[in-house]
Length: 109
Image (cartoon, rainbow, N blue to C red):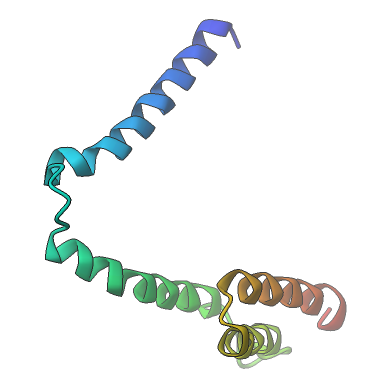
């Protein structure tokens, strides 16, 4: 791979990143007033995305053969309980992920 190709890739990535950063100001202006639709999407999209991730993670569970989805449901329950207790999203997700990996690698082999 030559240097010109690498520089071109970096320049395109930088341009796209800058465009994505400046685009909201170009579309909505720099007035400081956020449109209501953006405020609404900011409120509802995080929950919708989390719901889609849960469905995606649980879609291939087989209830007819072992372990019947036990690692997924145990890790999911830990995430929910830990988040309700500590209210720390990062802690909840990391703990659930680590627990899930331990369960599928060592417990439900």
